[in-house]
Length: 434
Image (cartoon, rainbow, N blue to C red):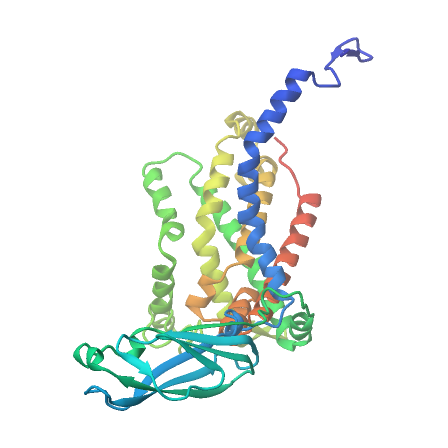
């Protein structure tokens, strides 16, 4: 192992690791390997499962493979020795479109009951055990197998219902979740739908403005609380309330405050003669606005949801921005003030360049979280009135329409969009000057 000397004469570090260093590196990787495997399984497992389901026409009813249901009941009275009755096995294929192969069932009769009649040719009796081989049964198949039984004195003295011992069914069926048949039908369906592109536009609108609103409000709050004054600690704690409060509580509060009939905001606006009638902030899709002779449809419900998003999540931006602002040397501001810089100039030329890096990171995190946000919109509007985003569409496709494959396909689109955004962001994101 030799050392190299650069042009300035300094000794450069060796270009290869020694045997001891290689052994230590191998030991470190070996000790960390289980942790890496667990993290990869937690992260990649659900992601790969979602990709797998997105290429399959699977619904909620396909989560379980087809199985044979056996409902057992007895027809007749067995109240004295020698009495006979009919034991019925009502069979049903649980699937509406899948066959069951090599289907059958086995049942054990209670002590004291004996099969006396001629059983079905597909069934055989061995002592107290009845075994039936049904072969392949088609989807929606239903039938009843009857067996004549006779009771003896032991059964009459201690009667036990035959259905108390459940019949054990058997059989195999093709499981759409585990086979290797794939299709692009889910993606073709969502991309050919006119609703998908409108939902994508709403999602981008909601994400961009919700993220920007949270950052701007957080930046403004951090600027206010950057200087020391009496009660600053209390005010900082109050600023965290929207973020730490339960989402269902704050969402319900907003719904009550903005109610079109009994809400506080509508009452104040009417008393101030700002509006003539109540505004349904969470139920009205849009209102026409005339700006400079141009009429536009202003999205009321979507804008209200965006305002809620900015209000609820600005404390996170506020904390990070405030921490970064307090790390900037006060001497820079003192020198700028001596030079006659106004507060706005100090913010623009000193504070903002120092905050570019943290603002970029916050924008990335908030963009991803807002793009994936589901609970806020679902609690406030349920996706109605033009507020349906891709995450709400995933829920509706998977559970409202019972099409898990289409829901997984929409989730894959969400992943691809966020991956593309992240790659572009990391390539062109600005950095701190300090």
